Amino acid sequence: MTTFQDFAQSYLAELERATSVLDLAQLEKIIEAIKRAYHEKKRIFVMGNGGSAMNASHFAADLSKNTVKDFKDIEEKRFRITALTDNVGKITALANDLSFDDIFAEQLNDLVEDGDLVIVISGSGNSPNIIKAIEQAKLRGAKTIGLLGFTTGGKAKSLVDYEITVQNDHYGRIEDIHSIIQHIIISYFTKLKP
Image (cartoon, rainbow, N blue to C red; front, side, top):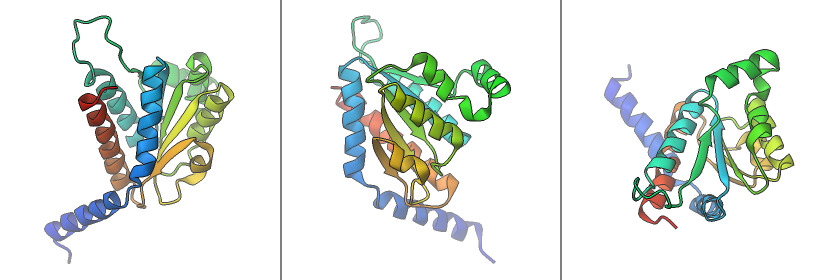
């Protein structure tokens, strides 16, 4: 019988293994895309389902807040980031009136413009609402980023402009590592705001 400590050590060892093989060159491309959006005053939209929805909300909150040097300085350039997971009224109306597959694409249809940045967070990379969001973003001329998982990155991997794929097949660990990736990005911009 496996003890709790054995189980926890195994979980953490697998987390360490998966983080040790992250493609940092891919992450650097993502950093550069976010930096470009910041310099060009483009909007950034982020989304995901379930735990990835929570990661999207967390990422938007931290990137917009933690990178501000002086909250009293209204002239300070800021990240223009929105989590499309945060408008429950809009999400439920779209899911009810159209379909759950349309909840992000239709929000992008209202908001995204040429040169904006769309970030999708998905363990499988196969969720229909994520795929539709990527397709809508591309139609509108936005650049796309995927934080993906399950080694292959799913269908999303071949559709996005930039991606980093967690080499693991456990949703919890994928979400853990997506959170770590986001904290690396946020910490980078907090210390080295362009």
